[in-house]
Amino acid sequence: MIAALLLSFGVIFVAELGDKSQLMAMTYALRYKWWVVLLAITVATTAVHAVSVFFGHFLGLSIPSNVMSIVAGIAMLVFGLWTLRGDSLDDAEQGKADRVGKSVFFAVMSSFFLAELGDKTMLATITLSAHSNWLGVWIGSTLGMVAADALAIALGALLGKHLPERTIAIGASVLFFGFAAWLLYEGLRDSSSITVVATLSVVVVLVGVGSYYIHRVHRAKLDDDAPHAHPVRTGSGPDLQ
Image (cartoon, rainbow, N blue to C red):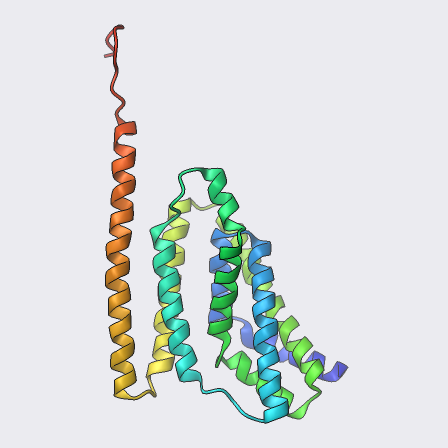
C-alpha cells in the first residue's frame, strides 16, 4: 500500500504540473478565498479518483472522454461568461461574503469534477489502480493532485492581492474561455458530425445569450452610477468655480 501511495503521488503530481486543472486552480484563487478553492478541489479530486480506482481496479474499464470533455468545455464557457459579468452586488462586504458562500464552493467543485473526467490524471489513476493496491493509489493520487493544485492556488492568491478587481475578472474570463476551447477541441476532434454541429450550436446560443445579458448588466450599472457621477447642487450657496 505504501509503495502504491508513493508511486501514485509522484506520478499524479508530475502529470498535474502545467495541466489545465492546475491553471484553473490559479484562476479561481485570483477571485475567491484560497481555502474555499482548496477545499472544493480536495472534495472533487477525492471523488474523481474514487471513480478512477473503481473503474481501474474493480472493473478494469476506462471512461470515454469525449462526452465528458464536451460537457466540461461548456461548463467552462458558462463560468467564463459568469466571471465576465462581474459581481452583481454593490456592497463590497456583501460581495466578500458571497465569495465564501456555498455557490462558489459547488461551482469550483463541479467544474473540477467535470474537467478531470477523462483527463490524463484520471487515466493515469485508472492505469495505476489496475496493477497496484487500490487504497494506496486512491490516497496517493488524491494527495498528489491536491499538492500540485495548492502550488497554483498559492500563486493565484499572491497575484490577486496586487491586481485590480476588474483586471482579475477579465483575465479569469479569458482563461476560462481558453479552458473551454481546449476541452471542446479534445471532445470534438474524434466525435461524429452530428455531435460537432449540436455542440457548436449550443456554444453559439450560450455566447449570444450571455453576451446580451452581460451588456444589459453593465449598461444597468452605468445608468445607476450616472446620477452619482455629477451630483446636482440644490439650494442656495456660493458658486464653485
